[in-house]
Structures are given as C-alpha cells and as structure tokens.
Length: 288
Image 1: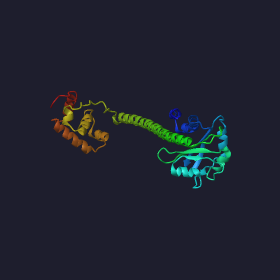
Image 2: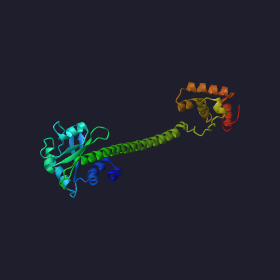
Image 3: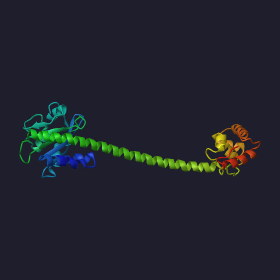
Image 4: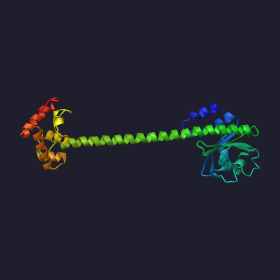
C-alpha cells in the first residue's frame, strides 16, 4: 500500500490520480477488478474500471452500464455506505436487491468490497473491488484494507486538487501581472511623450531644461514643493500665463507664488531670483 500510494503521490494532477488509482489498488491489495466512482448530489457516477490482465475490459463494461448515473436511494447499499461513512462487504451481489443492478449484471460480480473516499469527512467518491478472476470471495480483512487505502487516497486527491487550484491561480496572477506591466509601460511612454510636448510652449521655448535643486538643499528648505515648481519654470523665462498652463492653475495663483518666492529669496526682481536659484541649485550646503 505504501509503495502504491507513493507512486500516486508523484502524479501531476487529480485527473491522473483518478486514472491510475484502480491499477495501484489492484497491485497493492491483490484485487482482480477495481472500480473508482464519483459521488455528486446523491448520484453515483462510475469513472474508471481496472481489470487485471485485460486492459480493454473495463471500458467495455462501463460502456454497457451506460453514462447515466445511478441515484443513491435509500434502498441501495452504497447509499447506506455513504450515510454511515463505513466500508461495505457484499457476499451475494447477484441476489442482493440493494446492489447496482446494471453494474452487477455487466460485471457478473458474485461478491465485492467497497469503501468511501472522504478527504474532509464528506463522501466524494467510492471504491469497489473484487476477486472475479481468482473466484475468491473477499473477507473483512480485504474490506478493511480497501478502506485504509481509500482514506489515504482521499488525502492525496485533496492535496492534488488544492495544488491544481494553486497552479491555476498562479498562472492567473502572472497573466494579470504581465497585462498590468504592459499597461504601465504604455502609460509611462504616454506620460513621457506628454511631458516632452508640454515643456514646449506655443512660441517654441523649451521649459524642460531646468536645473533640479538637490534634495535637502537650501532651496528645498526655503521654498515649498509648489514654489520650487514655479521657480524652476520662472528660471526658463516662462511667463506667468505659461506657468499657469503648465501647472494647470489660475494665473493669479502663479502671481501669488512668485510674490512669495521673491520675498523668501530676498530678491527684488525675477531676474535676481533666477540668479540666486541657479547658484543655490548647485550648492547643496549653501545658505542664504
């Protein structure tokens, strides 16, 4: 059982687990046939039947049974197994009225054991197994062994489902991140083009080549961030109207900023303020 579960643990997905589990159970516990089914909203849906020594027999039998799911009514043995969450040992399958009739007739099963798959307490699937080829009836030891395998297999299946969801979410996050990166690149390029266009006024003057005052320098301590923006544009020779258009503010607001700048810099004219600005912009430790 440990070797079989180890091989199942290495499989890449829940679908691969469901496909390979019947073969591993037969190899581990000696059964001739193993059926794995899904339980969904009171329906029993056979998925995969492994038949030892005949690779095609399982598909042929399930084809005879048909794709229509079996309802887990109160009369069926499997319904009782799901309700009690316990394994099942059936010794007279052909005569028992609670047995899945179409499946019993298609398989010719005389006796079998079954166990629920319930990784978190809720039954999500069923395992059925028999010794049809060796013509031996299973016993309680076989029943307990299948139940033990079903418990461990349920944990593996749950882990595989969670891992699959995580991989899907990881792919989604990567796709979203890549798309966001593309959008940011596009916005950045747009901003650059807009900035280049915005620093040229209608007269062709370039407002972009302005010395940038060092952080924590005298100007940074003397003027507010908005006043620094205004002063940088004043240093290019921009008029109040040009500055107002660039900063998207009223021209009267620009005039007020310029007045405060002249006062703080002890300058009587814009030219004197520009001269001090150009000098102080290159002197991080200079003081007025």
